[in-house]
Image (cartoon, rainbow, N blue to C red; front, side, top):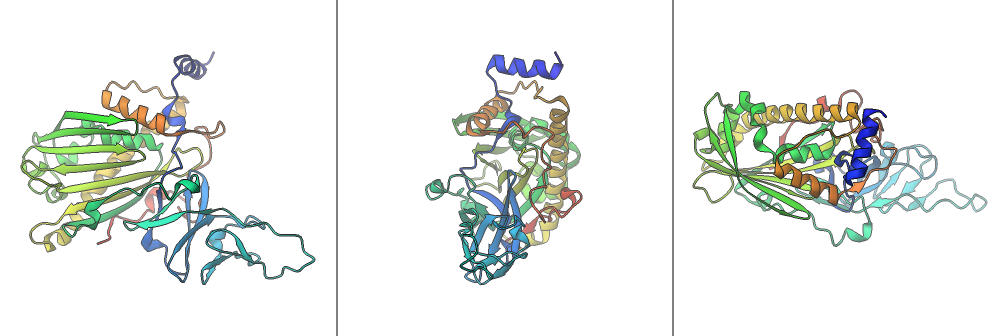
Amino acid sequence: MKETDAGVVRAELSGAVDLRRVGADPDYWYPVALTRDVRVGKVVAAVFAGERLALYRGKSGAVHALEDRCAHRQVPLSMGVVEGDVLRCRYHAWAYRGDGRISQIPYLTKEDRRPPRGVRGYPVREAYGLVFVFPGDPDKAQTTALPELPAFSSSQYKTLTYSRIVRCHYSFMHENLLDMNHQFLHQGVVGRLRPELIGQCGDARSVEARYLFTHAGGKRNAGASVLAGEGIAGGSRDVMTIRTEYPYQTLDLVPEGADEPVFSLWAAYVPVGADQRACHVYGLLMIKKPRVPAVLTVAAPLIRRFTERIFAQDRMAVQAEQRAWDEQGEDRNHEVFSLILDVREVLRASGVPLSVSAGPRGAEPCAGAAGLCGGGDPELRQPDAAPVR
């Protein structure tokens, strides 16, 4: 018996399910584009777990999301043209309403065969500078809430928006942010940080961890000093709270003696390919404005460079984890941290099984989204972090 086969047998005997074979539950709102990218009269290609989407904004200003295929000859509708509030296929000019129903076939006569009803339309909502779609059961969309981000709407905070492709299963991202014991990876940027887990809690859909951070020396990045204010960079003791609230993740940093976070992060990891071996990371970094707000505007480039360096290091690590899984064909991690074991159970129980065909060598991460990555390495072409307010 091959070693990989033995691993499958062990998993079956123990009743365990390999988390990296668990897909994201589609019955939630997922961001699939930045609002500023979906302009009036334009079409944008997007994707969720291998489902290709065509987003367009009609003259009314509303954004619509349709299957990215024409019911006629399967040509991507993301290649189409917006006319008023309908999307017209570039090939034979079939026109679609925002709900996916066909509104016109220019050359259709009474003698022609009855055409199809159309393509699937997805519920869409815009919030926080993002376009969210509901890829699951549309009947659940009305009763499923968007994430609540009070800091985004507060005049006391300024928001930076991030959009990146990472070539790993979304679960690696949850584990990476929740497990702050990996600070050795970042010591060249933030110096020597000493995290201490001071509390954890959770339920069937969430896991929360509270860390006490102290700075133990070493060179600190200027962007870290600006971002944390008098927090970590100032040598005080700070409390960082990280929470996986399925399917999203949040992080708040509260300096010692403060009542509000000096910054808050919200992140969503949206699967790209059908095999879910890559995800599109959308992040909102909400930074509390200093007494002189202009200082934050001037310092934004420093913060951006700092966060990009941290993210690049994390991406290097999680993509290495994914490569190991691909090569080994199973999860051979020997995790000892109870917090990560807890979040794995939440992700495993909250997700849905991937199809058998969606294995580690399945569809390419960007194969299902014409124009999303634009060819080549998608990681090199995602837009830099940009202020939205």
